[in-house]
Structure formats: C-alpha cells, structure tokens
Image (tube, rainbow, N blue to C red; front, side, top):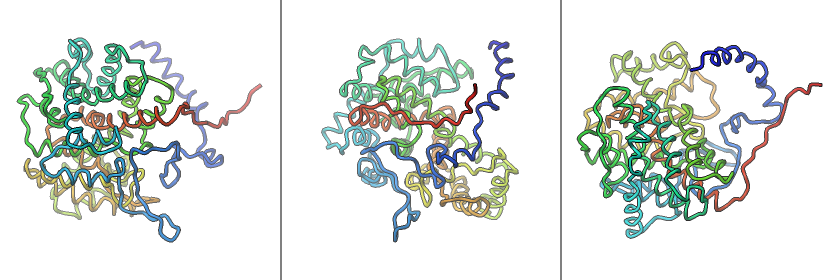
Length: 442
C-alpha cells in the first residue's frame, strides 16, 4: 500500500462529502426515487421480460392489497416446478433449460442438456494451478470474477456476441461455476489457512448440486437429502425478476455490446455486495449471537425480549435489523422461503438439528410482530429466503466464504437468460438520466 496516497485519500474525504452530498429533500422535490424505488418499495419500470415474474399483491375494488408472494419461471410457479420433481429427482439442469430456452424440456432434450452441462465441467489445462492457485483470497467472489475474465483469454470467440455463441458461452459458464467456486476456496483454505489441499475432479454424470458436494468434501461423499436440499436452494436462487441489482447490471452491460465474460464479471461484482448477495451471512452472524444470549429455544417470551433489544439497537450489531426478515417486494410471504423451509426440516432431522430448527421457527413467528410494533413500515414483513439458506449451508458443512458464491452458481442461469433476451429484444444502450442539481459558478 502506498502510504502517501493513503494519507492523501484520508485528508480529502471530508471535501468529497462536502461537495458530493445532496439533501434528501431534493429527491422528493424533483420526484426522483432513491434506488429507483418508490416509498412502497415498487421499482421504476426499466424494461420488459418474459423470463420470470414476481407478485406480492392483488387488486381488490381498485385497491392494491398485499397478498401471498408468488414467483414464476417462464409461466410456471416455482413451487410447482419443485413439487413436480418429487423427492427423488434433482431439477437444477431441467429448470436451467426452462429459463434459458423458454419451455420445459422433454426427456430427450433434458438428457441432452444435462450431458452438455456435464461436458462443460472442465477447465483449460493448468488453469487451476496458474490462475486460481496463484492468487488465493478469502473473497471467493473476487477469485471467481478474476477466473471468469481470464477464461476469455482461452476462448477464441470471446468477443463474438452472436446469439449462438452467447448460448455456448452461457452453457459453459453454468458448468464451470461450481469448479471456480470450490477451487477458489480450496486455494484460500490451503495457502492462507494452512489446511490440507485436495482437488477433486467433477463427475460429468452427476448434477450441479451433487458435483458441488463432491468437489467440496475430502471424501466426496454426500446423502441424497443433502443433494436434494442443495438442488432446491439452487433452483430457488436461480432467477428473481429482471429488476434485482445483478440482473439489471447484466442487462445494462449487455446493452453496451460487451462480451459475455465481461458482462458476467460485472454481475458478479454486483452480487457480492452485502446489500444483495451476502444477506444470509448476516443472518448466521445474528443467529450465533442469539444462541449465546437465549437459554431456552422454546421460550417465546425470552426470544421476543431479545429480538426487541435487537430492533432497539441495544445488542448484536446495533443497527436495529433482524436479518432475514422483510423483502423489497414481498410482504405477506416469500414463496422461496416457504418452499425451502420444507426441505430445511428434512435436513435438520437428518443432521439432528431439530433444536436449532425450533429456534428458527420461533424467530420466524415472533420477529414480524416485533418489527411491526417498533417500526413504521409501509408493507408487511415476513421471512425471506436468506433466513434459512445460511442454515442450510451451515448444516451442509459449507464455509461462509462460499455462501455468496452459492448464490452465483445458481444465478448465472438467470443472468444468462436475461442476457440472451436483451440481445434478442433490444438494440439500444440502457442510459438512464440523472438530473443535475449542481450550482453554476462563473
């Protein structure tokens, strides 16, 4: 680190605050929605999509009324997709086909697509040694982003934005993402934490969830319940409308004419932000604190009293937030949370973590009531998918460094679908307007 530059930066920060601050009242004065969202959390329309849909309300007698949340992939409710899979089938690849190509595959098309994904579970010769292992970091998202950009150097058609080439690149990245994540973590675990190194090769015949567990664990072993729960979590994280930050980033960069690797790297940079992809880590940190301070997981009064202290900014990180509660869109319920919770119970039973499950369920019941009483809110509050996803990853023995990377392994599918749709439907660069409120000087 250049200490002179560091000192200079520290000395200049007050000047930046002075000249870059805009009074909050100015946004209201000119009708500008902060974060492109109105006071009710509704996003400003910036485009059209046929890939997915999110609903959290219904119109009754001309009034918008909060309702159970729903999430559709290409016209299919996500909970119905998972229900149709049953208890035995793993459906990540099947659902990826649906999102990418717009229709549910028949058995032959599904088998072909799974085979293609399996054939993509490979990296260029010496890539792991020369790229991933050479710069180990605990920030697995940064490691993955660097790897994605470096993969462009191995692709003779990296700059080709023709539709067929983008589809090829998308399928390859979907297959490669689990390897980039696990190998990135293994490099950090070995070189920075001084633990043993092991690099397993994927099995082309296994699913994304199975391969992830195989690559991560020293003995390559996993149960069907573990694979099923992880597969379900991946499906639920795969896509969430065009307006989320990383997907919007994907469409913005795509609209500039940029290549696939640069576009996905930009989406990764967006996702790694703690306001987007890192929420489940905060849930786990909060739950660790709660477990230290709650003696009886069945005592709802004790739990309520401590949650009140969290909201009152007296304990934990003193920010007044119960992490995993509330969502920018959903109010009555997050459909992803409701689906995942069913499988979390199964995994908790297998891992003999029923006592922890009781605590989670009690917090899920009590937290919305505490928030409603102590905060001025414009819509309902309910648990979101992050409330349970960190618990799932912890029960699977996954290090926290991989939590956000798991999100990316799933969301690469949604990003790819939106990139393809942007290429097909529009030919204009996305260029939103900012109103200048600067003071003119002579």
